[in-house]
Length: 342
Image (cartoon, rainbow, N blue to C red; front, side, top):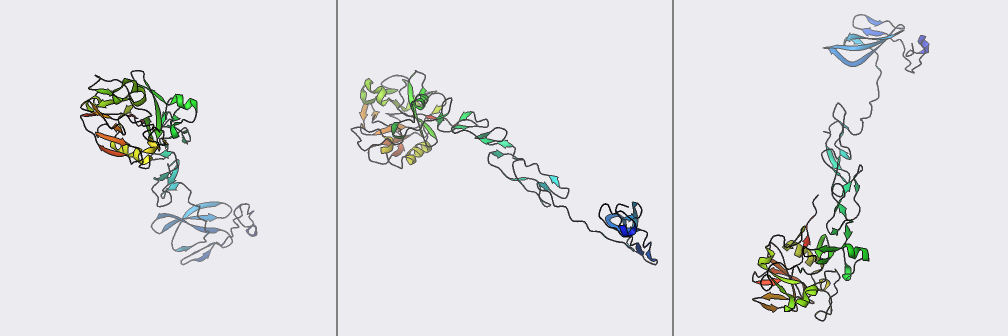
């Protein structure tokens, strides 16, 4: 009686306020008025037969064919739950992104939040890590934020940028050093997303006078200008230190663009170039080249690349030039750090 109106001797505890309106059937007219109430449901039991609800002193379900006329109570539709899809309202599995939800959705992830990827947006992208896929600290990358990003170096992944030839502090200067297999140490410099040797290579590989040469023909110049290397020497295994490689044409082009197509930001100031700024800290010096045991171009800087067999030429107050290298000549070398593995 908790469903029935007080006027029909119910308690109406649930607030439905049901009145005993009876039913109307074909041939019998109104029946059981004042005794029962009858309500249609949407459940079809068989052809033309529906499940109905009878309410009197108790409530029960029974069947009625569509020749009857019964009372109706409408129910407000429940809102379609968010992050569900399809007629069965299946929950989406898109954990950290936007789901293609709704009645006509298919449950796929339309897009992932920053730091996440995967079919269910549940995997950290490179450069993000942890339970919440937080962005890695500056200089770090990888799925666990445990490797250095491009251009960063050392155990602490420091920024080896060297504007105007100066590091940000002494600790960074000490950290931005690379030691080759001969024990020679080189300062490093970050330009864009590439980490370059900040001075010319000077490891003695092979035979002097054929595989490599002293700049200007003077061994006292080795530390200042590095060595000049033949093409054959570049092909030897492990020429650059492990994890480093000779520049490609595209990497030379990045260097050229970083200098705004002007040599001066890459050249260290000297009597040969009073307008040089070394703004990018590359510290290029005029080592010249060697061809047929003769030394040339003391007023230019020529750095040879790797598989593309190109040279990168700098000279004061002019645009850098990328050209085809001569396999019979010897050039300066700058190695570049390999791209980190994810």
